[in-house]
Length: 68
Image (cartoon, rainbow, N blue to C red; front, side):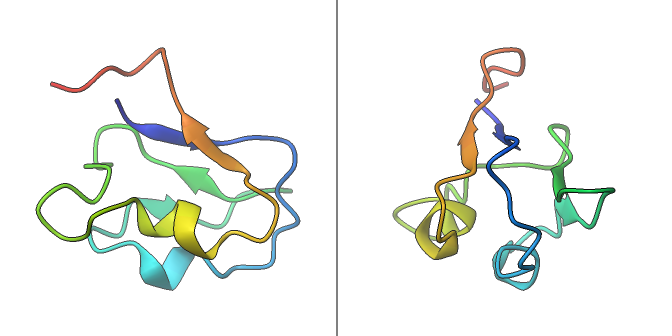
């Protein structure tokens, strides 16, 4: 399933440049993951890179957007 960024986001910006498919954009007030672009880093990395770099565990699986 795609990931989403929850309200724990501190808007630090570490996740945006790490996304291999540019699915993360700056929102107001927190960053946003486009569920139509998010590939969970499958085929790119062993784990989602937004999860790997986030200092507060804001990126979480989004049950509203299962894998296609």
